[in-house]
Image (cartoon, rainbow, N blue to C red; front, side, top):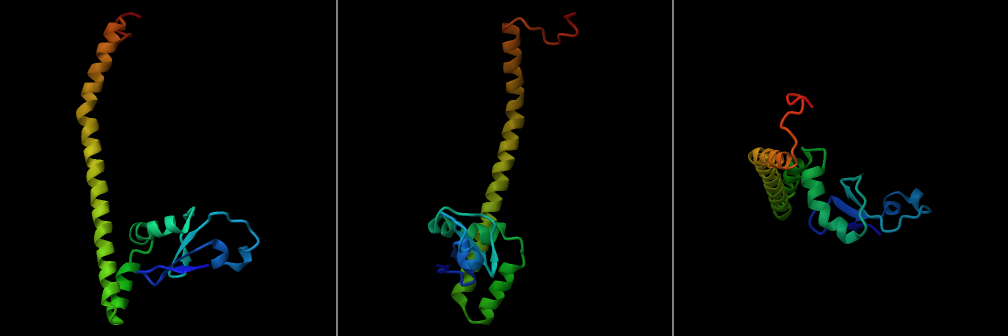
Length: 142
């Protein structure tokens, strides 16, 4: 059975055989998919609930057609569906925030590794000296 998303009318969730009747005889236990504007997303979900939870990320972060959301906002405005237009704008804003948070997190990790690399090298040098391993085995004649 195909379920239309409660906020985004162009998003549907169902099992593969719901979207393609030729797959009816193929066993798909716990295989749910997200369809956006007639195109199935590649990711498979173990439950309808998991697929529903991922709709916003698929729609705003992973969907390859970046012009799709602005087009849907304009279509909603043209149709007088201010609620849908507002939901789409807010979804875009959350997506931008997720992207910014990931970028900042990556920058912090990169800075962390640059700051602590000398400490890691110093720790390794201390370990080598405790084990009696020279700093440069080639220079020491080994």
